[in-house]
Length: 450
Image 1 (cartoon, rainbow, N blue to C red):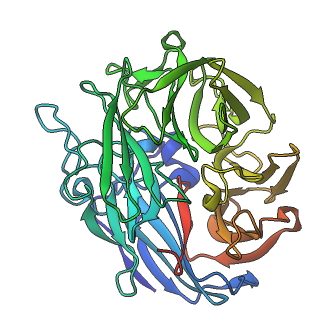
Image 2: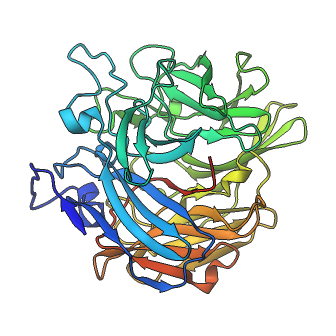
Image 3: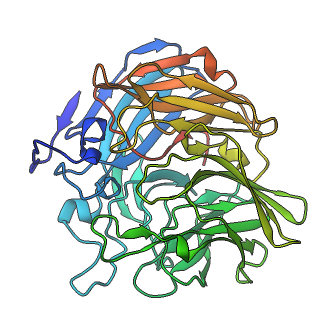
């Protein structure tokens, strides 16, 4: 095992909730080999499980969303847990202290913390945050998780990039957007082709800068969520405030007319960080699944699974709560992104300031409404779980992979569950050399994919 630590670590006797417990950063970049395993790793799994999250190098940040990005990765090959690595994303902010805005307040899109997601498209692995350009990281042998640098699609990208792009499983296109704060346009829609070339960039007219974290993709449509968390420059920390008077609406754009009209439909005020999936239902209906918060007014209302059904003929949206179990970080088999998917899953865990809650994964049958829950046991909390397919059938068998933190031992494991029978318990538990702080999003990146 090799270890490196940066200088300048500060200590606090009373850290903020987003810097306490397993939200606290780790200060060592580790490389460990031949990890111990309880159970049997499916031999079909050869690739990387990567997950991104905030890990401030000086152990201080004004908000959980602001810490420097760190990617934690476990390499699996033929039934073995070959290695674990964690590396900071070496953005210019991390290495040189370059700020997102210059002294005149102008955005520097090559600066940022790249702390929210890690995805692969057109042969590039990208660490993402919604306030700046993505940063490419290198997963090749001998270069594992090193930072390559900012990626602006050959100079064509002139806005920030969402941390939740969508890859169309049919065309291979990458759909995404950027939202800005200073001046209109506050929203721009982008599309890159399967080869990674940026081919569409078009402004979308919205009345104000809202915190637009995610969106929806179907085979024929893109759907934006313009929700009432509005820029508030006077607010300390995260500069957005809950403002139900702003209203809430969904914007529908046809994929075959990317510069055409965006049609807006009103919904009840709410907030959504993350979509589960979306699909077309005939010619005039679009079905969306979301983890929905009743508000973001500071009262701690937990999110749960809802379905929105857009009727384009009537211009209305039917809103339906599907479950009352709290859950976030919704995922499906990504090979069905934008297509009808029968199964989806969410994680139940801890948020800054909420204290320990029963950690679980919930798997939903979106056709029948049935829900199956896997509880990890006292003091064990999972993060987001990515789907790893067992074969080439979209929606077929596979595994759910997630980091799980154990408060009693202050350690973390990588846990693999059979997606078709999560109640049976872990197929394999890979024991890691240090805890993995709670973070955001990641993916299973098999060697066989492009």
